[in-house]
Length: 416
Ligand SMILES: [Zn+2]
Image (cartoon, rainbow, N blue to C red; front, side, top):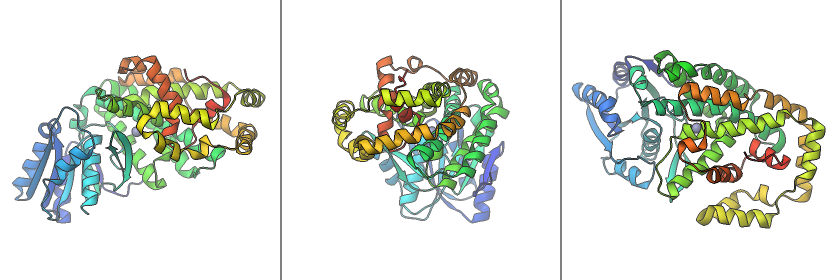
């Protein structure tokens, strides 16, 4: 797809950035980086800008784990001087989100200079922020340009790159969930974006072996795919095309780690591991006839609102009321609405099958993730079976959206 902003991926990213700033007349900057990305690329960018006689405020965020929370946002705000400046995000996803948000609220623009092909959010407008331990996406702004230095991307920590691959592979699941939500739950959908997005992602995911071997051609394709994913979200206006059950359950795991003060696991790594399970649910659905589905829908009880509310309180603790308020439509579904939903599932079974047919089987998801160097199992990334089961069973409460997770719950397909 055509991007609406200048995008460069290659070996001369800093030169291209300089040309761009010259052409646009930018002379004052806020460069946001951290202690890892400063020596990797930030210092070079800072040196070139200062060498041209330009004014640079460098914000070097410190700490073992950078989180887009109040603490780090304030670190950026405290360095600002009320002058019109172009923000430069030199880093991966979190750093870009911090820059995206701080530039947006100070009415400045920002340029993304990714240091790893780690996530698909570089070109999106949403900034996932952590507020009181809860992840919330603040709608802010996309960068006005993106300059990725290919050699920097290729030298990024392999697990960060594998995480980007997990995020990318998850799109095959999220696109299916997006369409499922349209057919069964009446969610907004754009068939043209869905087809183009699917084709683009299908092409990029083939590069798993090259990515695993850290070959630059594979990593370039990965970065392109991740950037395109951001553009498709922009074109649609929200993240629905690129965030399905694999993301909701991954958010659940992420919140758990945050709440318990445990070490973070890269976003796409979790998305990849959950994708193995959600691909498994699609595989189960593929094996069912319309009559099987009708029988299973009848045989599976829908949890009463009282039980769901109780379970949510037990699972989500302090944020339970917020979750319940957001999920009213599902939790308090009337018997008539539930019957209509089940009827829709049976009536639309052919379409459900068409959607499921485009999802790779779980074995293939595992194979691709492995080839890219990404983990495939919950215990490889530090979760117990109980924790992972809980994420699969409760992840759907984190977004008011339909997905394969809700379909499999209606059908009584077990989580693992
Ligand atoms: Zn993602």
